[in-house]
Image 1 (cartoon, rainbow, N blue to C red):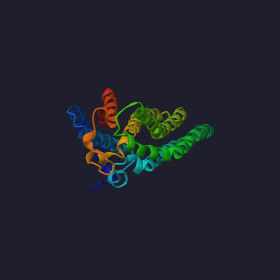
Image 2: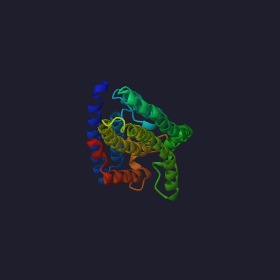
Image 3: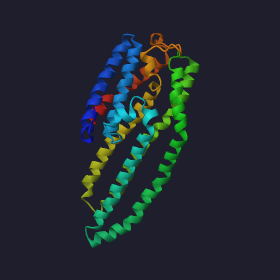
Length: 288
């Protein structure tokens, strides 16, 4: 089924509603000891919640979810998500500079004041560029390691949890943690735009309401961006094992029936569920 851009919001709402049901089903299945079914339901919940946020933050369109993203969020679409986050940064910078033009057109007196602000606002943007450049360069340098460690989870996910498995899991998770760039880029975009608006308010007092709206929307989008990062981070473990959770793999001698309470993937799921419950994350996403 194809969805037009105008359906993105509706699709996002439906996705998070289904994600919440998958999540509750997962908890029930875990309590009944139906581990493979519980793991699959949790993976589905995370995937749908991720896609709902991608739509809400304009990092994807409904028609792209299945075609370009699918079930392997990191392996299939990490570059796309980072590119869209950068696009949001550029768009907000453009909107901020556009406000300068609006201010210049108000009157000759304001035009002179705006001209004086040009250099100051230019410096705000220039001073942020090294940090943004460092984030992008860091992402490019760590991308191969991220992909490598996503695949590494396949090897350790069905092991019994012990000290060695714990260290391997922690090492892989640390590398995956560099995905925080998704959140940091969007946060940077809002900070720069807000800084520009703050500089213009003395000249354009009517921007005060715009500033308040920007801050309110930024707080929501920053929370969603952080949730997006956490959900993708948690989902990384599932990307190379979803089919194994559902079907026996004779060649690799892996079977869903061997999963138990001490299996690495079950321990990971328990931690994910604990955190989501503590912050009521899925309900927060729905309300945003």
